[in-house]
Image (cartoon, rainbow, N blue to C red):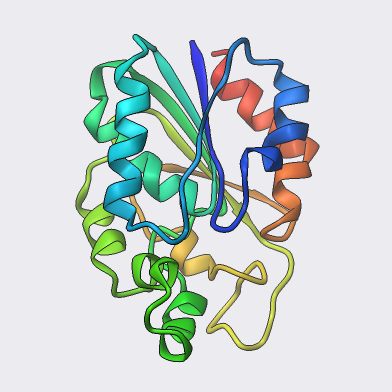
Amino acid sequence: MKVVYIHGATASERSFAYIQKSIRAKDPIYLTYDKDTSAQDNLKAMYEILDHDDGPFFYVCHSLGGIYATYIQNEFQIVSKGCISLATPFGGSEIATWGGFLNPSYQLFKDIGVTSDFIKNSREIEIKCPWTQIVTTAGDVPWLTGHNDGIVTRWSMTCRDDVEYETVDRNHYEIVLSKRAVDIIKQRLYK
């Protein structure tokens, strides 16, 4: 099975260094995207990369990467065997919504705000492969409504009813360095 990593917003494949070192996936695929390119154009580029591989695929994604994985598992249903998402904002990002008021031309804010079409449409897509969302529970900051991990609200991380949830006491960025997250990934990947 091919592990496909999809990083979070403004990050890169390097954010998965600890996870990759721990699970030692053979020939992993790293799907990257450009924060200045529309989400739809980024998706097209990701589809093209996966079109050249027979899979099967198991996705490990952080934050916005999980939204991309929602679309990808729908496009590649036959070869999508599972997903672990880390702190994915299924309900969108309040910070991006606020940021959009300050910088309305910034593409990333347009794509991941709470009312963006990319987020709303992703919630209409049925998750068809076994999917575990790791909900991060540390890092609560007062400028976000409700409990949050310093970046994403707990509501946004848990608003889907077609995924399994696990909680890990880490903040939004620490989760990619968590042994507990690695253990969950290994359990799901090597079932």
